[in-house]
Amino acid sequence: MHDFEKVAADPRFSFLGNVDVGNDITVPELQRYYNAIVVAAGASDDRKLNIPGEDELTGVLAARSFVNWYNGHPSFRNLHVPLDCDTAFVVGQGNVAVDCARILTKTRDELAATDISQHALDALAASGIKTVYLVGRRGSAQAAFTMKELREITKLPHTDCIVDPDELAQSMNDASAEEIQSSRPQRRIHELLSTIP
Image (cartoon, rainbow, N blue to C red):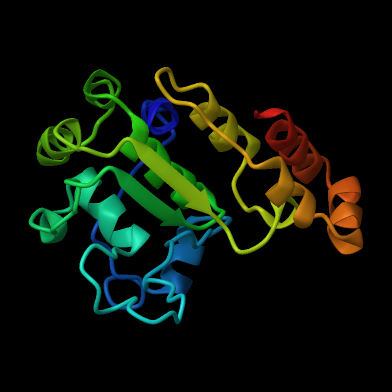
């Protein structure tokens, strides 16, 4: 959030919300005023895992719903987030998955220093969650999270990050080793994961 505040404070920055491109303004109209147009709208739908119980079981939430809940989106304020358990399981290998895991592991004081919504702050502060598993279907070579996000979660006080070295080794086939060697960011991520006890 601090990055956004820094950008938003720049006098060259403007934010125009609730604009329906195509209805409120057309792309050709935008092109008359701007040299470049970047479409960065994010995911509009949840990504399904296609596993049994995904839609029916209590306690299974899409990351987008959870993120909207803790960010204070009015439509998600009353979302039932089951925090009366001791273990959470986050499926994903991207920055959103790491964000979800980080939110679940932060203390009340750490969360209060962010712009989290008050209802989420209160609920998370009363949470019984002590263990969070972050699980992906592939290895470190295919991880989509950034080094910055990974490093941030490893530096949280009162949080122990544990990487199973056997799991990391099992994910390393010839193709993955080649991916890691050809990509500096993936190599750095793999090296950091390898050093976490």
